[in-house]
Image (cartoon, helix red, strand yellow):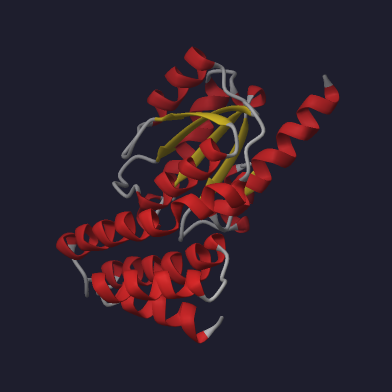
Length: 219
């Protein structure tokens, strides 16, 4: 990772609003792509905030500050980020939510913005979403994809609960399920029978695109 993006991550994890925004602008001026700034700078800083929160070195107030910083940093890069994501008409329908017990939304909202910019219709269920709410929405809108997000290690089991609910209601085979968030991994995806693990928001878009191309090819 470049020194510039490491500086972005460090300022972010230190909750330095002005420093984060200034370095984000400088990274754009230096020619870094918006998604690289997001993945290797801002998101890495957010991950560090999450780690500090789990170690009880940061608390809810610090998470709120991090949310505020990310919202403003996203405004700096959003136009370029959307242009990099590309369009392409309505590519598919996605139901997206943060699993039960988890109230984080920054990563989810970034992913949703990129999916929408790429031509997806996204139904955002919000945060702390119980399995029953996912089931209800899947029945209602018949999505192609269900996306599950988690930030805290203690809430990862919520992914399994959603998968069990979809299976119980005979909906599992009707949707492609992908997961993302700091405590998720390929191992977590395999454990709960998820179709895809997405390490970054851009990975999520690429994974969705690949699935929809394959789905259309079968039709």
